[in-house]
Image 1 (cartoon, rainbow, N blue to C red):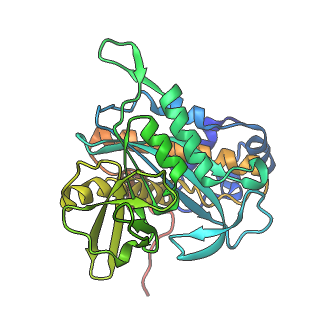
Image 2: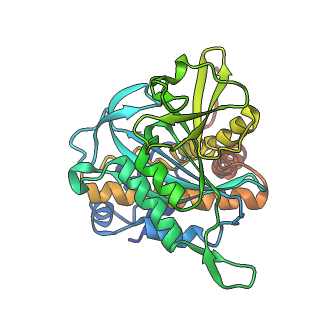
Length: 340
């Protein structure tokens, strides 16, 4: 059995992604055979990049997005990489596997690709989610290459980095600034800022921020370091405070448009969960879970590529696999309807 076989199962199955279901329908392999495959293979983020790099269409003003999602394991027992952590989807702390993802966006085409990911397993590697993001950013700049206009490899171009408030930290911002890149990042309402030298610190939600933004100094940042702060009213119940090192930015509308690109990564998380069964593996061993996650992301890459070719969505493409079944059943039903 190979990863191609396992990937084909994840791509073809509609609702059930367990090894038992796979074995019951494949017949060629037993449950134990499939389980042994997952425990011995090594599907890595490098393999994901090898499969997606020819699909990526670079843009000089491209975006790098970072965020994490939690694979819900509340109803599973003794799964090694699962741990209690905050889930935005569940709006609480649950047992789950954290996956930190990196997405590349071409703003001109309004298309995006997952180019890297990490499994959050601090008990195994001692790394925080922030450390994973820092390493993925460094690895992208140093090692990810795409084909240039002359056919030679060149660094993947991007100009702006977007992330969630969870990653609003000085080390990451300084790393981005050293690369000469811009960032837009929401901060929590209780973040302490100062409007200038000699002025005290206060919460961002206590400030009166003009539409063109305000230059502020965040507590904990180097002396004299300023960023632009914007207050974005997203709805009657939600206001977001965003900081950027683009101090020339003077439009709240433009800042909102920049931040809106970040939702592409939320789209990725939603699509991969709903079309690949990434959260539904019940294997206990960490290696098996890592391989399942890697294979699921490879399946999403394949679905996304095909969807772009035919001008449809990954949902329509996945559900379209049932069309032949429906045609066959309507012509020659396996179970016939009867009436008294």
